[in-house]
Amino acid sequence: MAVDSGPPGRVVGIADEREASGASTIRSYQGTVRLFTELLIDARYGWGPACEEAFGTFPVTICHEWNTLPHLQDYEGDPEARPFTREELQRFLDYADDQVARAVKSKRKGALAAYRDATLFKVVYGWGLRRTETSKLDVVDFGRNPQARQFGRYGTLNVRFGKAKKGQQPRRRNVLSVMDWAVEAVADYVENVRPRFGFPDHPALWITERGGRLQPGSINDRFEAYRDALKLPKDLVPHSIRHSYVTHLTEDGVDRRFIQQQVGHECDSSLAIYTHVSDDFMNTSLHKALAPAFAGA
Image: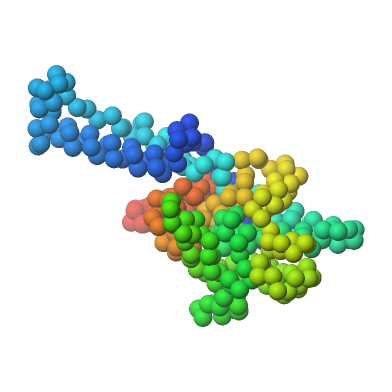
């Protein structure tokens, strides 16, 4: 498996406001306040003189470009879930594969679990999944995509336990397979490795050696063990892999609407907090945007 290399980008942390609310929510509040104050100070409506007469003062705008979140932050996602750079992700997935090879070579217990977990992290990245979504996958959740016959029975993934809105049931979505190496990895696991756990009637994609379903906490534990062994930054968490999926597809020029549907976001502003493209990508995009203007010159 290979992840295209690329220069790491710079991550900027969110202000302390994130403790009370997410960055996108704060940005939405700031925009609402900005629009309201702009209405109040608009001379066409007469609110200024009316306020001065009634209260002895007049309204002013309080949200400016220098004190609102979009101006202050280059990266609006939670810094504890910032995306992997391509080089970091490649190291992480390679290390997971190495643990399988070491377990097999030493003939010690745990080789099957190591293979399972190495495949699991590839699936998280290959389909842009959350940790809980991943834990609750069943083997039958994979299906065919007539537009991508080369992927066989792994052309789509039915995510049945997507993040739910407050008070509602989990949202379902179909995620189309786009990475051939990820399809190859999960196909090999399902067909050649999973049967060796010895529980053919269990529906779960990720099963334990005792025949249970792998839980999110176990995914966390394995992730942290690999991350710390590689001495990668501790602000990388399992959700960072999902962020990487969005960021890397964006850098590769995939349509944002398609990415939005893949990860189950209802609006583009939610997708934006997942994206942290590299400086090289930004420079390349700038050159492409300016190229038509300089072509005539």
